[in-house]
Length: 200
Ligand SMILES: Cc1cc2nc3c(=O)[nH]c(=O)nc-3n(C[C@H](O)[C@H](O)[C@H](O)COP(=O)(O)O)c2cc1C
Picture 1: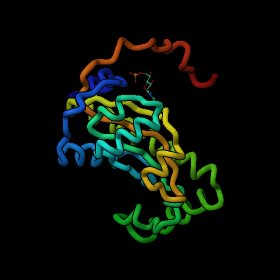
Picture 2 (picture 1 turned 180 degrees about the horizontal axis):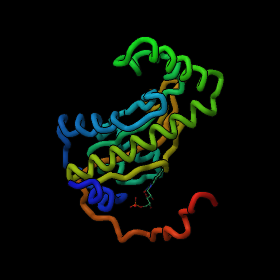
Picture 3 (picture 1 turned 90 degrees about the vertical axis):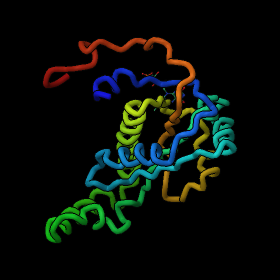
């Protein structure tokens, strides 16, 4: 599917065929696309928890005010950010480049995030937001639909997935075979309201 077609056709779908199972290869293809999303300093601070167990999907649905797309979707991806990825052997984020520029980049990366909890959190949000859109467009291109989600109990879902202490959950994306299409779009704002020439 053409990129523009995938962008136009991606919608937040709320009803999925509960019996549809995605293959391991399909799930891998989506994740392999997700990890090509850009991250600042190539920090790759996203962590993806892939939930296919019906029991766990049902529990997450309960923790999502009963939103049924969570139970019905083939896959629930919990997008998490590792707040300390800047300090976890960051040389590997630049392993393919020569040593000198690599050590400069790593120094700069460490200085950007050390003792800056707000920046660490912001970076998790930025990276996971990018990855979420990649996941949704990749899934759409493969004939699947998705729903991005923040309407759930973050603490309880964190406990359920054994979220490490230095990670945060950013959002979820559910993926599956749509059983009902989304209603017409709510209404996009005109470009004249949301875009500005050179400055506000
Ligand atoms: C960060 C984020 C969180 C969202 N959380 C939910 C959610 O919890 N439940 C839900 O049904 N839709 C959720 N949505 C979907 C939005 O309602 C939807 O994207 C918006 O209405 C625009 O519709 P569209 O995605 O079909 O273009 C979320 C979307 C985003 C980007």
